[in-house]
Image 1 (cartoon, rainbow, N blue to C red):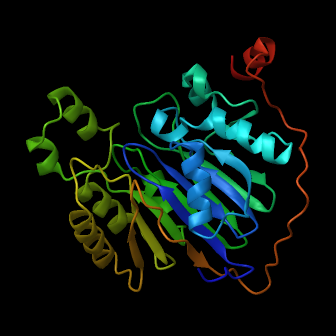
Image 2: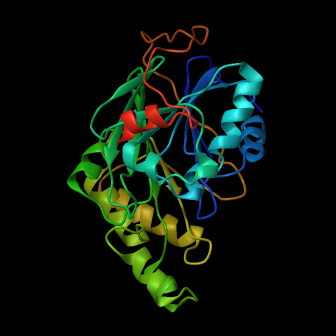
Image 3: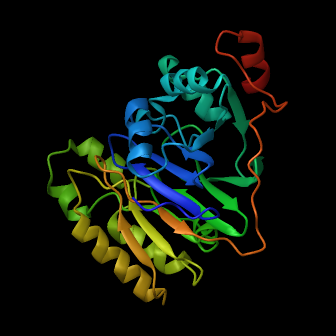
Amino acid sequence: MATLFHHDVVVATLASGSRGNCTYIGDEHSGVLVDCGVSTKQILDRMVEVGLGSARIDAVLITHEHADHVGAARVLDRRLFKETGTRVPFYMTRGTRIGLHQNCIPTRVERVQAGTPFSVGTRRIEPWTVPHDTSDPVAYTVEIGQVRAGVVTDLGRSTHLVERNLASLDIAVVEFNHDVQMLVEGEYPWRLKQRVRGPHGHLSNDQAAALVRAGASKRLRHLVLAHLSQDNNTPDLALEAAQRGLHDARCRGVGVHVAQQQIPLRPLRIEPPADFRPRHPRRRRPAARHIHDDDASRQTSLFG
């Protein structure tokens, strides 16, 4: 595989779908993961496969507590500590931390709040609220230099906030979960069909196309169609909806890519402005509030 440009911002969707989700955002030196819902082995092997095997993981940003987004957290935490000697921070909201299954809790948890940006190295991270049937779910925008990439999945409907954030993105990973007809006529139990279609479930192709039409701006360079249902959608149907949304939004020249469950998507790259030169300092453990899963008093203080 070709060598990555030194200053490129890189987005690589390592896995996406109902059985596990993980996206890398950074450069060839270091970056962050958004979610870790597939096994640690798959995450690290797929980073090698797409040419990011030597990239350092500085943080993991968790969107919500469902296993397909956080299932590998504890094992990944241990693996990264074994390799680096440093506890990588796992960022999540209070509600997400409370909802985590005991087997998924990493050692170092950093609390985030929707609407309050924070930094990981030279990256500015913005968590923001999305409507989903969990305690306190968020989407994330990661800004490196003047390049903005975001992961917007697991939401049952669009909102003005979602559209506004989409308009700010150069690379957008957006949910195109299901085709309504396939869902209705499929084998899911009726209750599950109602959950998926509900206002706190998942975006249909038509809803995602409407989101793109309402929110995509001319700065959008790449659109990744994510979290496709293997039972209730097809790549062709999702692509057709995405192209319709981009056409209606008058967004031309946008690369459209379908993320898959079993195969990582090739890295997408945008070179920041010439005057942006990121530094890559040696990792240090910042003085920030964190918890250990065997420290009940800290847990009560931080999340109670």
